[in-house]
Length: 526
Image (tube, rainbow, N blue to C red):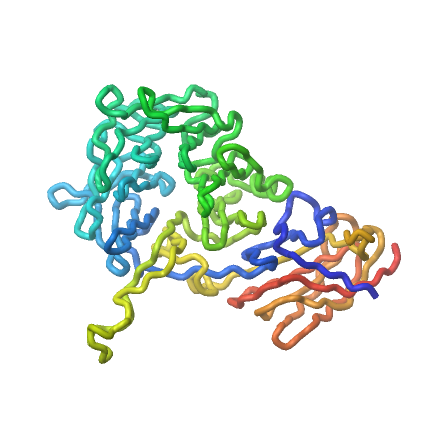
């Protein structure tokens, strides 16, 4: 009775574009709400509320660290607030001590950048806002020296310049225009001019000539270049100084970005990850590679809502070396699902139950629990902190629930449990070849009598199923509860021409599966 062993479950991750019977044995056909860590698959952590209750429903969040403390700025569609760790303060622009509300209509319009230590926020319909000096008592203001009739879809910092993309001047839209400010020379200041006609500054503008490649949607720096993402092409912008200030060259002629917010930079700062019209790619400024091809490309983009795809967004979860692409599946108005790429191991998994519309990353600073009146320490000997600072965390903007959450915190999602599953179907292996590769026979019936899970945590539910024809429907057996703290094997009996295996939980229990052994016999072809 041969025993088959399956390891390295995080080597490939989930694959849906290729039938299970054609996949390597370590590949998975379902990897939901799990992640690959050091060769094994682990249940993901949840997310927990942070920052108390926002005063307005948040649509955007930005972290800003000063020499004194860390602030978080957040915006609704009409207001701006700051958080100093505990207190929420209205910093909306004002005239005569009365708020002048913002007028953007959708979450995706909000964006931000930081130049010279000064945050600049833009929503495509109002004059960009800046917050200087950063302090709870400071209100947002219209960006100094910004032309009154100018608007831009995106405003981003690149070196000492602010870059405005897809501009509108006095009501006329220039969807291919890149406009840049005069260089900022001193920290804590903003550009002194945007006038491209002045010979005394290096402000300027340039219209990308490939008008048939769609409009400019976003831009992101990478090392010495600023990449300009259109709907159907990508351009590289480089500082050269002199009369022209910047040079422009085509990087990708037939590939563009899906929507604003659909590009991010990996945690090591070396690559951009971009959701295109039909794929997710990664590039280092020179070469480009598909992430989803032959794995999840068709599965994701065939399910993407054709109307609300513009509400898709992408972010980097640097502590876990991950990039998340959150998207609305068919029939959804906002992103509810995500595909997650581990850029260290090149592993893909999926996430459902997305309830946030935006993401920020930064330090969380909160007051210590100790009261001034508590304890007996004197000033000279008291080593306790006045505040506790958590390392950089990903903050989820829960617009519908009017909450902020920390990603990868706790075992639940805002107090609610979630399903975590790994599954492999189409296993037709009956042994190993001399070279160690799998020996596959789709015609021979296999009988499974026992499973040895290599796992920690739990308990989990395990079940096996069988397919009688290639890529046919699966007949699943009953779930068996398995606790690695008390058990060694799971007795699961059944037969068929190919085998399916599933590990899952529906409660708030952490677990990790590194692999499993399967006791199997062959029963012939009938």
